[in-house]
Length: 259
Image (cartoon, rainbow, N blue to C red):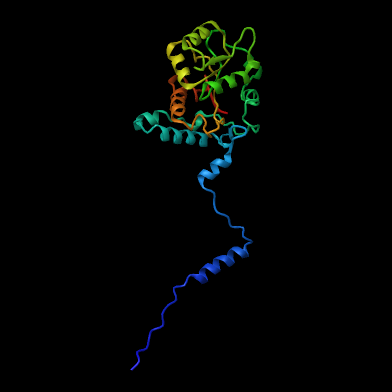
């Protein structure tokens, strides 16, 4: 006697595949693969201009978060208490996202003037030698030299743009310069700046604004916050007691700006 076979269930996925294909055709093929984080980051980078365009779009909250992420990424050898000491409050960062021009060398003076109560005062300097009102911090000596040339308009017979970086300049020569010159705008690298403050030749009591050269990238797509050798010294520089306690001080405010 022949045994009856129970009907078997088809396991073919073809109908489902066709259904998905029809759905894509119905919406005109508008569904696109979502870009990965790395692809999105590449879209933010303009290698020809040497700029990370994303920095200009970040408000104070997002910049503080960006800084914290970079500090923790490169500070893996630091203790939790050391890392937390390098955090910057969003309230400490001045929102500059309204500045719509490309953040290149050419537009740096316009950026400084846009955030100065009296733009003309950028050409002046405190009477005490070695006491700049503006410090621009960047990642490398070569870039610092370019920035110094970009702000040369603020230099005169009585006031000199400070070159506070190690590129072909010995620290002893820089100390002598600070001791003998009035400096309004200064450009430096984090390690050299910290060393000069520790030596007592660079004074911060007249400082009105700290500007981080944050948008600039090199040919390897790296900015000052993208390398351990520059990010951790930068974080330590920004979190010096002389600076950190003044970011939110209503009587002696210190602007922290990311260009």
